[in-house]
Length: 81
Image 1: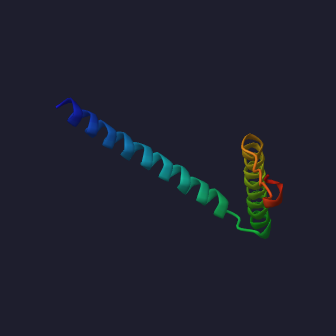
Image 2: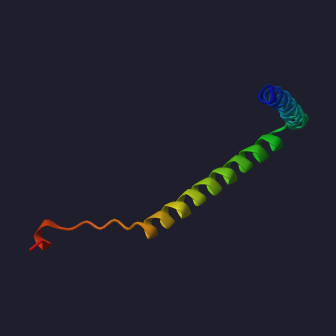
Image 3: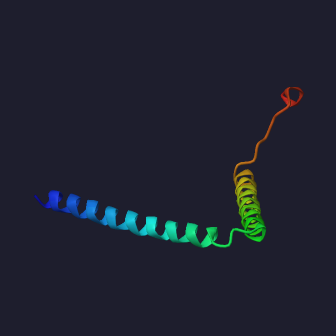
């Protein structure tokens, strides 16, 4: 019985959260579509480029960190005794 109540509560919270996110998404789309000029498209393109640059930067920093923690050592066959 308590798990049923918990499940129903989770479903209600999920519906409320999804509705709120959908409302925010709709408001954002409406604000971006108002005055659909070339300037807005340029701003969206610049934001997308900045986001991609940030993602690539973080991926590179994470890769460098992993390489520092676990260096790759390749032993040449001629160096074995």
